Length: 181
Image 1 (tube, helix red, strand yellow):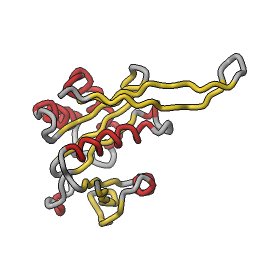
Image 2 (cartoon, rainbow, N blue to C red):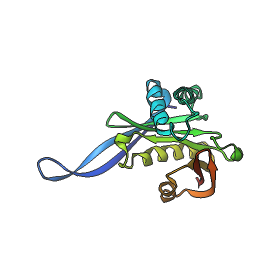
Image 3 (cartoon, one colour):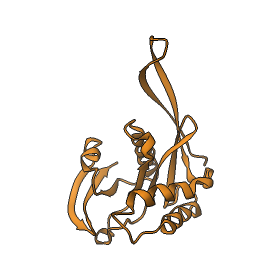
Image 4 (cartoon, one colour):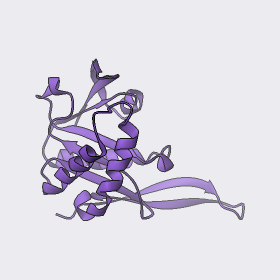
């Protein structure tokens, strides 16, 4: 099945002619398999973001992570969804069976590697990626999903995620969260 989500993101802005109008930006979320050419870019974004927190994870590790996602056909996991706004790649989110924290192997599936490029942050575009991922998890017939974060637990809580564990994980504090579907 060709996965395509078209979501309208409405932003109120002032146009140069000083009249107030609504600008509609088209947001498209698709499966990474439709645009495998962005694997290197996504690997680079994640490597740059996590480099200081997880120095043991290389750019090549991130590239291999995304290449593994290309090997599984929807609706299998792992699965990466990528987002475009007005044709520009803004971010990605991945659904995986088990994430980095091995103490919780019974928790399945996980949302992992949610990333929005710094040029697009603060526009609530990550919500579109998360909504698409949650819709996919629901379509798989699953009843819950998990994630961990080292810094965005308040943001996730605002979206309905529940904290279930807080623990040290390497140099960071991991907050493990759960979302019923």
